[in-house]
Length: 311
Image (tube, rainbow, N blue to C red; front, side, top):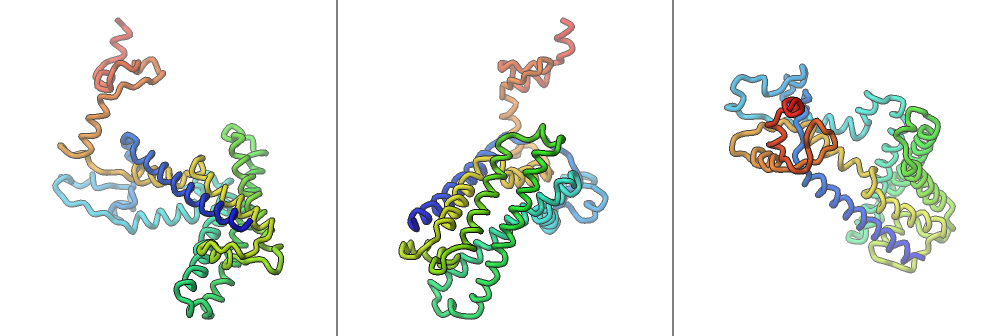
């Protein structure tokens, strides 16, 4: 049973990484987006951000150096990642359960990091393992683990209820949405109940991670706790292959679309890529566009559909 749990954990993490890398490659290799022209862009000069301006306001901007303000982007990213600022501004009814769900996940991720540090460092620095620092660390990850699981579960339950009862959400809800939320609820419920109710002689979180690092098959794990770990590992492996991997898409949406204000200069990389796109042969279903799979973008962009119709 213990070896099966170790295999499930490592396999889940491996599949998660592979799935995330696949998503990143997929998004990064997509054709360049159409410029949104949404301002302000947070990496602009703060004086321009204040009134929604951009460096294009400056006379002869192409002759002057540009200044990238990373602090502006980091402030916006922190507010969006930690507090779901966009959801608060545009769909406040869903903000609280979504915030609870996501903040609980952040606490659980932090818990895994704390447990790993608490288990791994003493293996390489035995003298540190017995210090009061790591005793306090064990108390901390116990609190963050239970709190994270509780918040995420409550958030998932409320989101599940909202999707089932809210008429406005029914058009946007598919069976997979229910399955995903139920998967979280069952996995978190099993792992928390299994950990809280584990037999006295069974391993705790630190012993589990230490045993997984050394592949120690002699430690004992409760059946329910083992089942919860396998379910959680399967959930981790499943996430990158669903729309729950939106954390990757969101990065590209913000940095490669919303905040992309790079100018197109003659002879530059952007001009070269756009030139290649003009040779594409689109197959849009809208008849007025004339994208029949034979005409290139150049043909479509230089034709007048209204004149062709009159003929």
